[in-house]
Image (cartoon, rainbow, N blue to C red; front, side, top):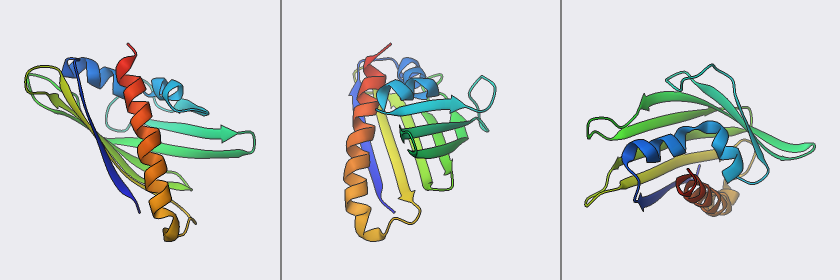
Length: 146
């Protein structure tokens, strides 16, 4: 089960970096060939569920996620969101941490443990490299766009 971590320092206040990263429908524009459907009513909170469907036609995978930790940054304290992957094929978890950066702006850390059911462990290295690249680009796009 590959585990990877990405870190970014951006010139955004923590609340804005958090907002950009945790508006789930925005992830569809940041990850190619992906659509997002939020299954629970707003606002985001523990228990929020959504599905990221990636692929084309019959070649699609659903990444069903549930927010299990929801602590937006406030009063100078770090923000933390944990997502548990609850689908049939894509399993694991993701964490998004946003904290004030020294000198201003925000430090974002995205950690993820990813497993694809039925994919042999021999593919873990390729899965980790692909996921790191894909989620790194997604994080960059989400943080760049208002």
